[in-house]
Length: 382
Image 1 (cartoon, helix red, strand yellow):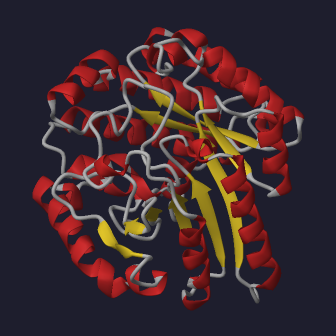
Image 2 (cartoon, one colour; image 1 turned 180 degrees about the horizontal axis):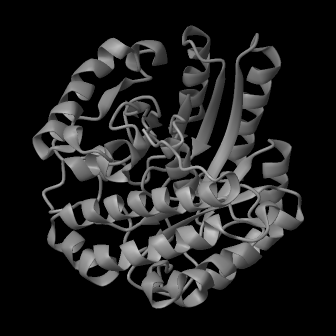
């Protein structure tokens, strides 16, 4: 299983304008300053032998997880190392999702000691990144983040990245965007996420006005970027863009691994562990859904994440899809808008539904072009 460990809750030294948590989080608003006790991790580890999977990832997430400090992090690494040494076939790996600002040589040595995968949030060239990703003094963070990515890579650590696509991204060409990330040493690929606001508070609607690209802009950008990615002349140096890899994989009948492409089936299977030991089905907030599954202080992970405990949540999600017509949509299995935070949003996302349909159709056409040119055959898409 993939566990999101949130040791500092929402605490972060960045003030990104499009942040998912710009208006708080129902279950995290009252946890300011509440850091996770290492005993919560011990409790989670103690229950792993009781669940079917033998391989797990603990991904430290935030807020900014490195604000937990190096002492806690060192204890965390030791706990995982000791567990793996005596775990009788169950293995835990560690990953970190970070804004990259705190990374220094001591952090790098800690990453190396724990064989930790690191993903850094970076939106693209300075003009794009600094439009939204600023620090508490409203200063851009691009130069510091890029420098730290290069330091991590030079120390032999495989780095991945997450880039949010905003209105500002649309001001550069898809080729400039692709070339920028091509020059960054990203061994673990790139996740791209269009910023599509789901909230309806004044703060969230203001953020949408400032940062959200139109569905028409995103359609054109993503189609062109897909072509650049697909036809890049050197396959060995092509950036691994996970959104496109997953899309192609699904078209060719592979099972998606991104949770937002599973129409709610993954909710609860990538649990989020809060600083106080509460376990949520997802780290995001989704309107009327109750994502709280239980607490590690009073229960075990097997029971908390059992199919029986998830049944009510999954039924609610299915009802939400049905009420929006997602269950009869012919591209639902390709579509990241089937994440419950979109399904249960009060905003009209029909423009972005058209965007996804256009992208899927375009991908099919381009894959058929490749197949026709190489094999003189078209693909029978299911």
